[in-house]
Image (cartoon, rainbow, N blue to C red; front, side):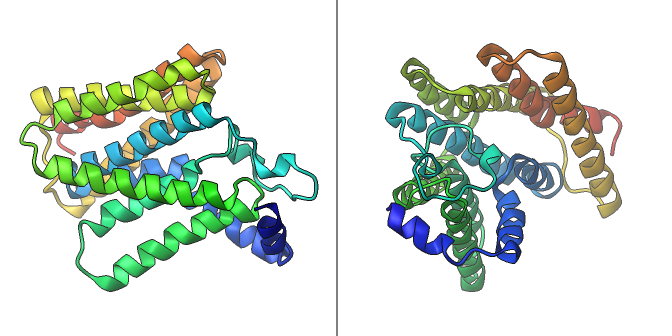
Length: 275
């Protein structure tokens, strides 16, 4: 597996480094928040819920699995070049970025019957996986495992939600499934994922029972809703990062506030003020 990584890194160049670094942002936190915000706040909130839970559960399960296997990353071995190590703080297997990409691709694929879009979504997933190997952050088995995990979760959540009239219990069960991973000496990313999951569960409960916002609005209101929502999330992320110490409990609280605001509190705000 190391030889394969060395082989693809033999084609490295500054231009390819820059392109793949930019493309890899399509599996990172800000892009994911923006994507979920667009779908949930402005297009279809039930599909937004599906996408959000597919992504959050994928992150939580993949990070939890990393803590079980505790496999070192390729760049810890001699002869492997490393790039963008800031996006790879934990263990190697499975690739969470690839799992997220596969979860996104599978979720969107369930919403369309156009083969060309399926091909583009598959290429997106493959290229994210290639990025992670090219950067020296993951082995091929990590990428393959991430693809299988993300696609399985994305498709599984779609099937479950399509047969569930009351979706909240499904979200609660999904959160509980992630809890046992805490007993394997997890790294911070797992606790961040748990915070995201718990915040989403509580936010969905608030939205379902007390808000029930309308997404069938004009494009001007959709633009304002999206812009103000992203600003609010950035403010919460920056303030919580600055004010809270670095420990697992604070990681849970920080990410809880992020998704609880996005899914529950913010919809109540724009519902009240009609934007």
